[in-house]
Length: 435
Image 1 (cartoon, helix red, strand yellow):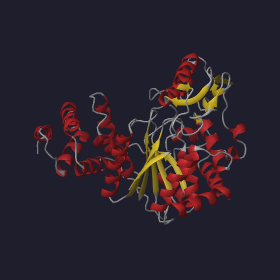
Image 2 (image 1 turned 30 degrees about the vertical axis):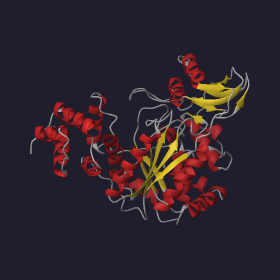
Image 3 (image 1 turned 60 degrees about the vertical axis):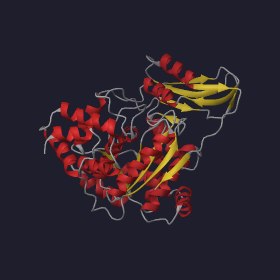
Image 4 (image 1 turned 90 degrees about the horizontal axis):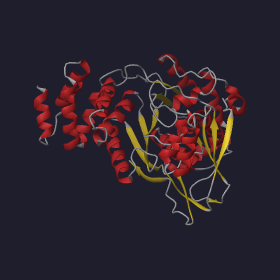
């Protein structure tokens, strides 16, 4: 088997066999095949595409390129959730304790990515003492006892994805459906859960801004998951405004706790409960969405979800008092600065990515892997799409420590939030469920 033959085959519109895909993935990871040949193949894939079978075989070959997590010692069906990313997307901190309270098992491994704010690991690390660095034996023990655990990815999980993504990033081949789906799903398959619920975002704050692209990605990933023997469902959800009100790490923990205490309704709660419902269904713990929703609402009203959050924090070395006194335990910014409306009308649109960038400029996220996140800073939204405002009304509160980029952050934010005389049409929170 020769890599040039594989490149030419795909360049000419041919369908690669599982053996050919496995050959080039193994060869690249081992160092036997050079970057320039794999770059040529990636470009051929970008132009010619891959069908469902090729995409599944690519994902499985990537999955097998490194460690495979063994969760067999954890009782019951293990269910994972993945989001394609957005602004104020704190669903994991809400849904994982609720699913655990209903008898589910959430064994979640997360990576540290770049973005507007930190990932789930960074949010949890804003709780004093919380450690995401747990040995696998301890990880499995926590899930068996508490029902959930969240830790960092192992060093050798899907090395093919890391290598291919770095190459795609510098060769203009990032935005290919098969390559995106393979990248996401290879990590989910390697993480060892039995079932996967995907949250595919679409809108101004999402990777897939167009709904049709988000639905195509959702379908591709569901096909991969089910083709690999994992029960998989995707929800296509709206990301045309911050999902929650909090954009920032400690702030997002605070909002998650408010929801778990029953104090805070809204879009974040609704999407979290929708995702959690499917996690229960795929776990065999509910027959349908109605039954699942009832169980989750009971876990909320009884306080059992909140108890699971406390148990998770304490099991991983964190200060459990954060549940009772988040304001006293979580880090706080030195200044809270209101950002006010300058016009009369309705909040008609938000350029959501710019709001995320404003939080990043305050120090809530990373622009490079070496950046240090400030867990205390961020933005708390005070208005949602469709709200009526007048000049002087507070649109958001900026939680600030370092003021170096404050003016730019405020400028980006005020430009991103549009106020017009006309009431906007309201988008659905959930566009589609892909089974």
